[in-house]
Image (cartoon, rainbow, N blue to C red; front, side, top):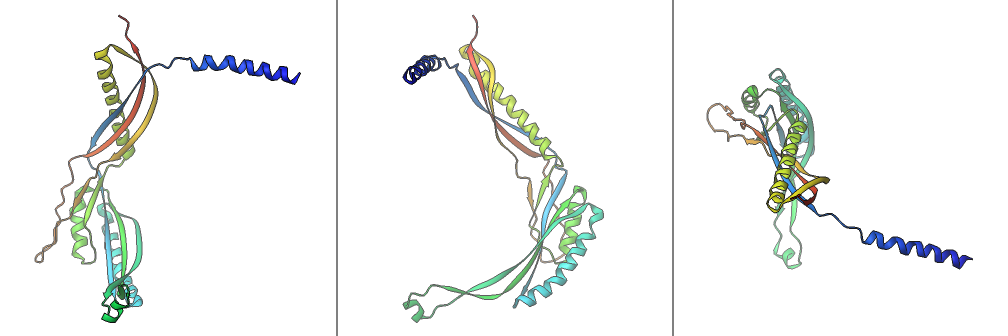
Length: 246
């Protein structure tokens, strides 16, 4: 009885396998679409770094506390111009110098060593500017304090997601245009979309470097924001295809 049931199950499976293996797969077309979108910069951001050197850890941190307090006050004084302190970070780094090995140590195969020469306390403020009209004026004021190191400025739009979605729309339209370019010359018909795979979407770097400070005269920053910021996106799209009716 058991043998009869097993044979019956095997017969059902044997009948099911050929119908699945013989099913036809419809041809498909997959293309990679790319798109860009441009928007005017609306905000800026930069890092303002304050650093203090000391021979000992205690000397570096105590002197730095006073400098960092003055730096914070200078930043807060520019809040009316649209400056905001987004976050700050404090760290202490060792300053090391190589120690010269003696001939005997070299002969013994000693590895080069370094000695702690001192310490550097560092506070980095991440700063945002909501008013680009006051950007040069604000950075110039910070530079005149002699406390900050500012090397570059990054520009942004307020709604980056919306800009990236515009680039994605452009990428999808590009994918459809490419698919039509492939299909039409050989009399193929684009059918249903069966797969969409999101690619990379990102803003292109919108950064401007600060000019070097001159040794004489006041330091006036003249940063020209980019006319537009570019956002790019890509997408893989797969269509079913078939021949057009003649």
